[in-house]
Image (cartoon, rainbow, N blue to C red; front, top):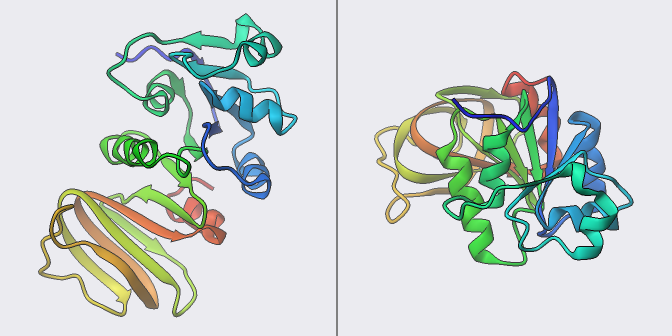
Amino acid sequence: MERHIVQYHGGVTLLGGGAVEAADLHAALALAPALVAADGGGDRALAFGLMPEAVIGDMDSLSPAGAAAIGPARLHRIAEQDSTDFGKCLTYVGARFFIGLGFTGLRLDHTLAALSDLAQRPDRAVVLIAEDELIFRAPPEIALDLPLGERLSLFPFGPASGTAEGLRWPIEGLNFTPAGRVGTSNEVSGPVRLSLAGEMLVLLPKRHLAAVLAALGLR
């Protein structure tokens, strides 16, 4: 059984060292008020004038000044190198759901690793906020209330298939794979209902954060 280092009953905002906009961080904290940083995300929290409740990771990117300011009681070093700092947070932090920021942008390898972590963890309810969009792993069934004409993309992280209502271009009968068919830049044509099998990520403009959390049953 996984051993949670810290446990929360509600939502947790996870902060990494990648690209973060202040407005996105404040929006996340309004919905998930517990702030946990992944390694160098501790420095990012301090730069925003915030004190993380915990910092989790292998501590190879948190600055000495940041570590001193945060204090040893809040620092939780996980030395193993088989997972990312984002993955360590998902493993060792218990929460109802997570909103992640700072895990995309700046370095493409870090972005891809974060998306891989997201795809691999159906047991965790996670929404990532990227520069322009939200990213989450699709549950088997989801209904989304979105404006007509809105962009909705599907990206597989393994073999995936499904059916959809409310999309301009149908997906029935398609076999999605990362190195084959993907589903970027579809368009909302009505109430969206997705039934999906496999490891599929959904990408939407980030202004729909509250709607996505509601659709996932997290509000």
